[in-house]
Amino acid sequence: MFQKQFDWMFARFPRFEVFCDWANRRRKRLMAVFVVVMHILGALSSMQAIMSTRTPQGAIAWAISLNTFPYLAVPAYWVFGQSKFDGYEILRRRELQSANDVESDVMRTLREEGMLFEPETPREKSQVELLERLSKLPLTRYNDVDLLIDGDATFDAIVKGIESAENYVLFQFYILRDDGLGNRLKAALLAKAAEGVRVYVMYDGLGSLHLSDEYIQSLLDGGVHVAAFRTSEGWNNRFRLNFRNHRKIVVIDGKQAYVGGHNVGDEYLGKDPKLSPWRDTHVGFRGPVVLAAQVAFVEDWQWATGDVITLNWDPQRAPQGDAISLCLPTGPADEFETGTLLFMDLINTADERLWIASPYFVPDQQFLSALKLAAMRGVDVRVLIPENNDDQLVDLTSFSYLEEMEQVGIEMYRYQPGFMHQKVMLIDDHTVSVGTANFDNRSMRLNFEVTMLVADEALATEVEAMLTEDFGKSRLVLASEYSDMSWPYRFLVRTARLMAPIQ
Image (cartoon, rainbow, N blue to C red; front, side, top):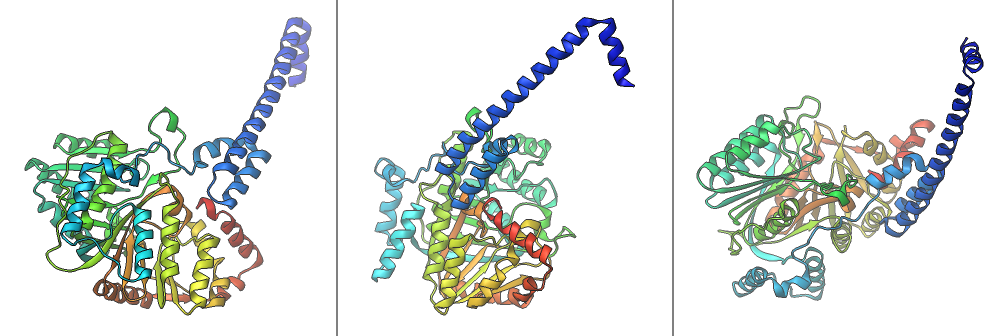
């Protein structure tokens, strides 16, 4: 039918046929140009990927996809392929210390007041040198640490801390929701702002994408300083969507700090029927390490706003306790791949026990090898993950590690009740790591994270009891669960593991 209509048009209007021929030739030329341009861009982008992608697996994956199917791979690479976050100023870089009067004063006070940890053995000296070089922050003594288990304990402590503020509150979360918990915290922040206390609130622009304008405006109207950490801010960064600021930090007057796995949302109080009960861990600090957590906030605030805020930088001993503590902010703007080096070091220092709790356990080959070596030298290595993960790709990938982990004696447990979101490591009977970093590529290479490292036997005993209770609510996963799966499902699991660099 249509052919007859075209024939009639061509016969009646000869120029119409000429126009159609011209349009068809133009369309083919444009398609040819598009194909050539995309393949050139794919080739150039693959060269950049080979030179800049941090893992060989990631570089190979990008190079193949960019050259074989550039039409989708090129825009995906521009959005997700970057692994280095340029333009973020690390204020604590070593070369800036001599010019930074505040930092010099803090270090002098720490040294004069005996709040710096002084290593005694060669092993301690090398370990301290490594950790301080990674963090560019000092390892301090005389800190108090509170273990905050689950949401009620965590947010009751944070609200109490906010209510005690006299000068300022620094409040930063990856996710900030306009719900019951969000409004409870907003009310506490507004009350302090009304008293003349300076309040600074920061959230991640993508993590809190659905935060309402009304919520933000009510904070602003109440005198609260609010900033979004948007990694795509500015013309040069418009495609930089793959980075996140995953930190959760609250600092009160430079004297109290709270860091851990919780975000601000009702689900973190166990009010989401699909994920409840929610299992998470936070820690509260008093002592000189608080100033180190404050540094992480200040760096983020300066990136987000361009402003440098005036704060208390007078280190003080905690009222009681002598926990040796270090704050390690890590992220894609670091000189080294700091997160990877930190966790590799923690694994390698374990002599008797290494217990890891992480909701997203997707180790690359170097981590898996380090864990296997630890188990082979007699370390009790256990990994705790949720039974029902909210990320299906991560859940599939976890099965792929079972056979080689079981072969060397590493035990994997799946937490049964609700969703386990804590990021905790227990090394031997003296060292604890609590923070925001998951055991995956994103936390090691793409996210801004913060980890609190504590050497304290009392805290280690508390964490041991906490994790022992968690293991009691979990089931040991055997390698046979993977080997007994159908071939198509095992193929799907192995395919998911190939995608680990982007998880």
